[in-house]
Image (cartoon, rainbow, N blue to C red; front, side, top):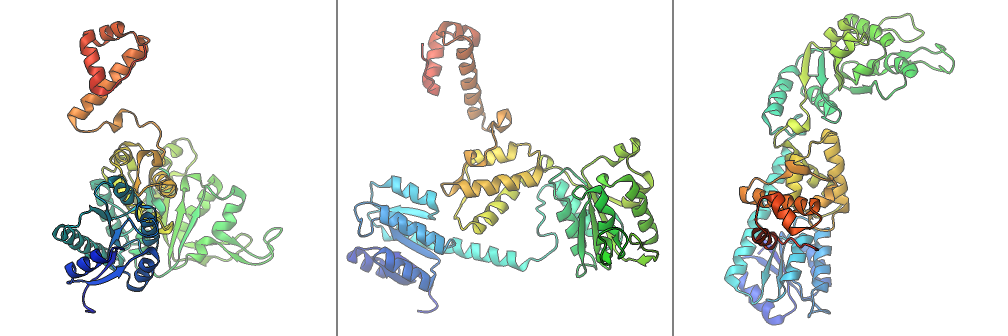
Length: 451
């Protein structure tokens, strides 16, 4: 008995209880007749699959108690596959249950053969999910956090794997939000310095008058307020990796001091006279055009050549074909778990919008949009409105030619009507069709005209 898979059957009818217990003899079938007993059984057995009759007491004629039970079950055990059982004329509540996160539904009267197939499939799906989760937990590769399904990103990750074991100073170029720090950490984690510090400084986030002391540290009494010796971030990164983000914003005066450090591999604290050797791997990053800054006299060319022994260019999300929806699915899972919500995926319209939206803020913007959508979603499926991407325009046109034609014709008719102030004859002339043809199109596309 103990080796059998546990199936929780929530059903208040004694006759059906007996029938289902007999029909599911291959499982350890646990019966519950009401919401309270069902939750107790769920907590005790944590079954992978549950069948739930929506018509539970004290509201057997309706689905309120069953839906409330479903909601509580999914909060307690989001991985459980709940198959809701409804009356033969209650499709509306079945659809509501699916929207809430139920795995599947079945309508009475009970056909044990059909229901058994649904239950078996649910157990198989549950096992596949467990195997996938187990595999994910086993993978601890430093590049596992980088989603690279498109060729550009796959080529980039191969370059990272080659560069990481070396001590070459590496420059990461890419727009804001493309994940430059994530890639820098991946390089660190793949190097022989992985167990040593990874220290990051963002040049654009620290005021110019504080940046020098932040990088190089200072001796006690070096300036007013310097009450004690303070190490700089470069010194703290000794034996590890130092990541200098937004190096394009590094003040000119500090560029020469950084260049000297890169050449000598030693620093001098502010107010100090002693050279301090520091063994660090240097990774720099910027979203700016460094060559343009060099031409403008705002960035030293000799520093550029020092920091760009290896240059890796991170493509923007809009150029990473197929990656946006792949990343969105990963983020959906992560934020759903963090916010204790059961969300099953994206609607077709949402997928289409994610794939066609240009994502000017790149992965950072995508992350923010998905996080908000997860928090605000009312149903188990994220739809287009939840994403708040605004008007998507023609780029979100579907691929199906028939649908494309229908969308285009509907839009053209509405524009012609607006231009002709709903004058049918003038609209037909603009469209190059007869009035009877236009009326046929009105009916075909459900367009109503207020004369």
